[in-house]
Image (cartoon, rainbow, N blue to C red):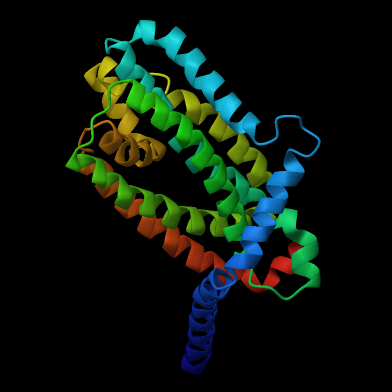
Length: 275
């Protein structure tokens, strides 16, 4: 009995170490997943007259339209609200985009996974690289908006650097986790799609947290996406993120990585059969 438990535990430990080895192996093949990401971006906008410029246009139209309409409902001045929306929406699309992309990151790479022995993380890094490209284009517009709104550099702005590192760290784990779960249970993709549509309205992007009453503003603390956005947005606006947001993000990062390692130890070897 004890030997059976020991064998199972050893096998699980080997699978967990294999998960991290897969991440490292994929990271070393940066040229490959960067090429995949760029090719996918080109294919998405193939035969389009403006190409990737549509990413910038769509983002600018959303930020401009929301700022014009919803700023009338906020007690904050127009420039503050414009920065609030511009930075928040860029961060939101990156965070939520990685969740939804994670649901299809392995199913969309079915042919590659079943035919070529590559680290599974190759597809994770490809997806994240594509998200970073989109985010970078959006943030160029956001940076112009921030400067035009009267932004002034300060030491608090540097707090955005660890926030970026945490967002990327979470993106790797959440895509791996969602990719495995969605490959096994296809309904998860539809569930996540439904939830993310709601998230846009319950996350402080179209509105400012300070405009809410105490009870409603406290309810926002139950939205994890709001905390991720705050640690990124607040420093860029010259504000210090609340300690609660960093505590929540730190705890969730640990939970997501543990969950990803557990899922990989249980499901990674059977991935090809589920696709």
